[in-house]
Image (cartoon, rainbow, N blue to C red; front, side, top):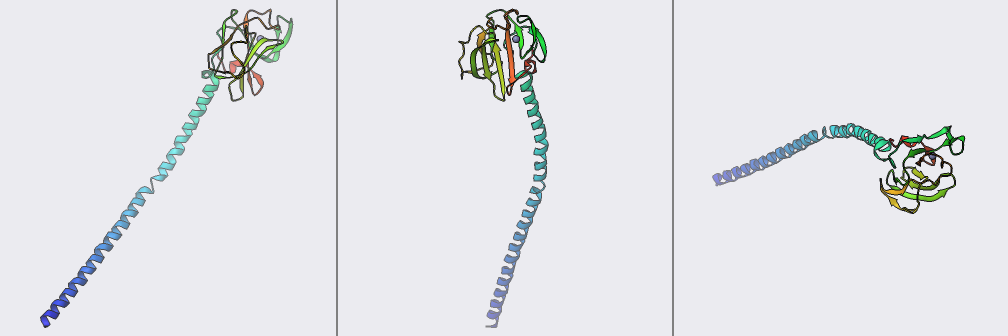
Length: 211
Ligand SMILES: [Zn+2]
């Protein structure tokens, strides 16, 4: 009987040891997983910092390059000349220039591009036709809105029947031809009177176009 009791005690002791072992192993695993988590956090913690820094340094050149693209677009790449030819009368908003037709000095809010009669006149950029009319001074005139406050104005045209108001035109689309409909410039050589307006104010087309 004594021996059996001892066996039972031994069993109980073994069970206790086993229990402690299980608890010990379990706590080791718990601690280990906690350490692993900490390690993971430690590993993942430093990462966001360089990640946050990188976009900042990357964004700066991105913004820069966008600005360059915009300035390029506003410079020479986005607009094409309406026709090829030499400029016979420059843009002159401040200093009056001599008008052969009127025999007097006057301001000139565009450029006169020399070209034979009926030379095709093309839209300098994509846009929407906003006006087609006959101007008292500059004859048959077409205006195209390109957005961003920019409008191109083509005068002394041969016809106003190729496009209509609210037509959407592509860059390089033929909208008319060179005519002799301008009373103010009728004694000049055959030419296109061409203006560009920024927010309603005439600007030198050379700002946007290379002639
Ligand atoms: Zn002119």
